[in-house]
Image (tube, rainbow, N blue to C red):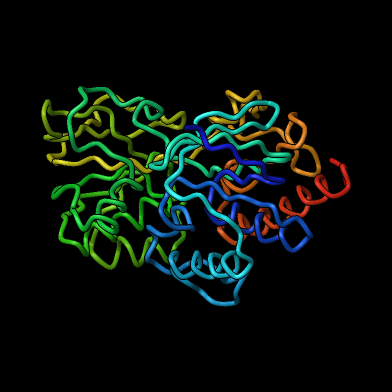
Length: 330
């Protein structure tokens, strides 16, 4: 049996952007709201981030990820905003009909307005263009963090990390304090894009080596990673002949950037910006589909979660205005 639901605003994604949008829309006068999220609790990736570094702009103090998420979840719960947990949206039509599935069955959600707050995902080995077979032990930094923080499992013992942005740096520290040997972090840029205090706290404090202007060129191993080849790169980031070096390891961790998660939007007919991978929106964050808005990391990858939440708040107000006044422009 198919469950059929009618809502004024459906928000796809229960991370910081989605929660903030729901709260803002509710406070603007729209109460028939539904948050749809595939996790079992609100907060998105914040629940996998036990380190501090969130909330200074929003709450005036540095919080860890779960605490930041809990603040917003509390505000949503105080407003009795309905949430469908452990629910995956499998289709969205231009007419704002959502098809979703969860352990309770199939759901058809007819929404008068939709906010896309689907977040972002990590770029893969394919994007990095690394040669070799497909052995176990090659994974993204976020996956490694989830192994440790959610399942208390160490994804590897002898680790090389490609990418020294803040995600890669924090992953290096997390692996080290949980017993792994992070042999080195390699970065193709001449300077790490990570914050200096993260370099100090996550690498230098443990004596972890950082190799700049260096990349991984090949992965060795069949069943499991046995090692990687690294090489220096030139000004065009191409490997320099004669600089290749073999590094034995059982795990290669990739931290090579993030990209908006917009497969659902693309199949619905939302026009995407080829530069950012996010939706193309107007001044009110509305896409080319009437009544469909986008915000947060689904729009473009933000540096601070505070900015994600602030943008979600803005978009929630615009979606409420669209509903209450039938206007798509301020």
